[in-house]
Each structure stands twice: as structure tokens, then as C-alpha cells.
Length: 319
Ligand SMILES: [Zn+2]
Image (cartoon, rainbow, N blue to C red):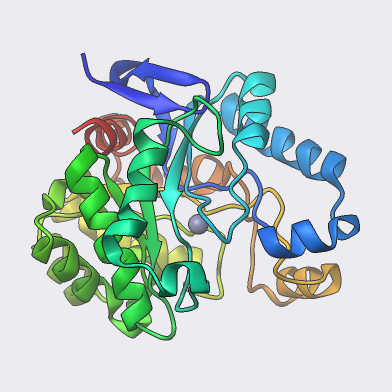
């Protein structure tokens, strides 16, 4: 039986259960956190994470993949605490979440030196603990696939080849990044069934999406609630059409919810909600609104739900 590493040790792949493939128990910049710790309220962050994860558990979620990497404040101890107190399994990643910038440390070292650190997180453990990363994370966004972004993608690909760990790549459909990201992974010899192109659901351009699906990768329909990228109705229409076209076995549905995130001052975050740029964003939105809407439309069966939330995550994580 294949196993999958969680922050509290390996579990049988068959015991992952219902999985949310892309949620963050906390997202904050580690440099700002270290230099100005008084700007952060650790107790409030923990309370928010516990509330979000418990709500997901109430909907039947047994496992959460948290793709918080370097620059997102990945914190193994925090994830372990949330997992212990909620009973929900948390699967962590290694990698670098950057749209272009890299520290001098990585600027002056090559792709393989970067890959070596990722491999160590997967094989030996993260941040001095025994807890191992189970997948790899990288990102391409507004600046596109810059030389630095390409370097991270190649390092992630090489670490994947060496360890068998799958890859989750943050993409930006509006910038057409997905196909180029897949191309880099393929050049490095990664099996497409080990690749997940996150945020593909930010577009309803079916031609773009099928171009990605044709390469054999998984796609993340994973930002439900972030109306600024695509409203829920258009996300649902896209998922419905993909189900009709027989792609249930290639989709992963999630919310990219951050129990807390430090990107905006509180008043700006409130304005997003007031303006409708964020709507009902949570770790339960897909269960509370999305699945019922898709069922009502007659396109979603129990078998699809099992495929999308149980089998696809298991196949992506465990091969
Ligand atoms: Zn994310």
C-alpha cells in the first residue's frame, strides 16, 4: 500500500479520505513576521485556522493539502498543532512561492542546489523536524515565466524526478502560463499525471483548459470564493461542462482559502468583501454552495464527488 506523508507522519494513501487539495491554514510573509512580530497575533491566527479546519471536518474532510511554501510562511509546528487539535490530516509541501524575486542565496546557486533542499524536505524532514513534505510547489503569475521562475520550476521538476513527489504549480490563465509551465516539467522528464496546474479554474476559456488537459495533467478548479478572478457561477458552468466532457478524473476542486493572510490591511480586506471581489470565501464553500448547485443542474453524481475529492487527490499524491 502506498503511503503519503502528513505533518504528523505517513498514512496509507487509502486513509486520506475526502481531501481539500488547496487550502492554507495561515499565509504570511516570513521576513515581515520575523522582523516585526508584533504585527501578528498568534492566538488569533491559531483560532482562525482551527475554526476553518473544524468547519471543513464537519463537512467530512479528512485531509487538507496546504501548499504554503517559502515566502508564504510555511511553519511545520503550526500545521502540526492545527492537525493535532482538529484531527484533520495536513499534507505539507516544499518549494518556493515567488512570482519572480529570489534571494541572493538562490540567485548565486544553481538549479540543482535548489533541488537538493527540496529533496531534503521530502526525504529527511522540514525545518529540523521529522515531518516530511509530500509535494512540490512553484508559481507563475503576472510577470510570466521569468528566468527565476523557470529556475524554480526546473528545481521542482528535478526534485520530483528524484523523489517521486508530485508537483503543484500556481498558474495564471490570464497570462497563458499553464502550457509553458507544463512544457518545462516535461522537458525535465516529469510524468504529466504527477503535475497539477493550480488555478486553472480562474478561466472559463475551455479551449485553454483543454489544451492543458491534452497534456495529461490534473487541473485545479481551486479558487472558489475569489470572485475577482472569476465569479462562482462561471466557475460552476466551466466545471459542469468539463464533467459533461468526461474530465471528472482530472479535476481537483478547492477554495485556496487562507484562514488568515497578511497581504492586505484589515480595511482593504473588508472592502474586497463589500465590493463582491471576495464572496463567501471559506474552507466549506464548495460543500455548501458548489456541489449543491452542480447536483441541481444534474451534472454531478456521487461517483463524481468520490472521484474529485477522494480518488484524484490520492492518485496525484501517491501515484
Ligand atoms: Zn494557494
